[in-house]
Amino acid sequence: MNKVSKKVVVGNLKMNGSLDFNEKHFNQIKIALKDVNTIDIGICVSYPYLFQAQMIFQDSNISWGSQNVAKDEKGPFTGEVSVAMLTDFNSKYAIVGHSERSTAYCESDENIATKFSIVKSKSMTPLLCVGETLIEREAGIMERVVANQIETIRKKYGTNVFKNSIIAYEPIWAIGSDLAASPEQADHMCNFIRNLIHEDKNNSIDDLKIIYGGSVNSKNALQLCGLESVDGALIGRGSLNAEEFIKICQIVNSL
Ligand code: PEP
Image 1: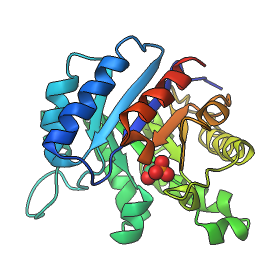
Image 2: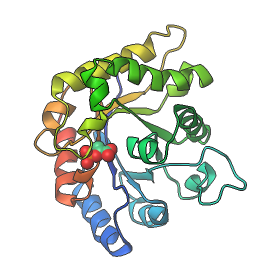
Image 3: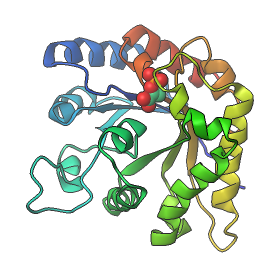
Image 4: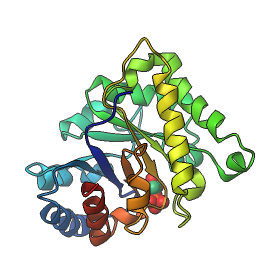
């Protein structure tokens, strides 16, 4: 089974930030992490700040991206932002299927699959979020839930679509909760996802990173990201505090 070359840490700023805040925040992160070169680092911002992220990070080792994308290429879709618009700002990453969107905006697995493939079509890196609710975990069906989310994409686009992408295992109960998954739980589910993708022996999937997200901080980053099965982390709250985000990146870089 192919192992990825570099771990990755991606910050998801969610609906936070302002021109003033970002100016300080992005520059602080950029300067502190300028010599960190054994991991990939990304920051996913709200659409209006893509240009600012591009201006600040373009000459750095930090990439930027969005937290969503439209499933259609263009047309009468008021309020949507197309993948071509994201590439206008040299965005590298687009988060698709974050649970805060699938829950609050009723995003279906079908739509998420279309978004995943549209991001790939522009050679950007989709960061697909999958994970179960607490009720699903307590019912012991987390594997089935995650497999369904992934299989919806595979049925439509084949296994190859997962090349050069990121899947974040984000148990919904761990997001924003201060209750990160245990290393055993994260290890089990990341291995489960890896085996699921690689069970298709007709396709070799290069550089698919399988990362963990949900209450990662500088105290648990070593345990979680140090696992061989975990190729990095998606960071929500921890990416809003520059010092904390920098510490997490330095920890993962030291692995
Ligand atoms: C997230 O929302 O993707 C996330 C991981 O959030 P937090 O780190 O705040 O739990």
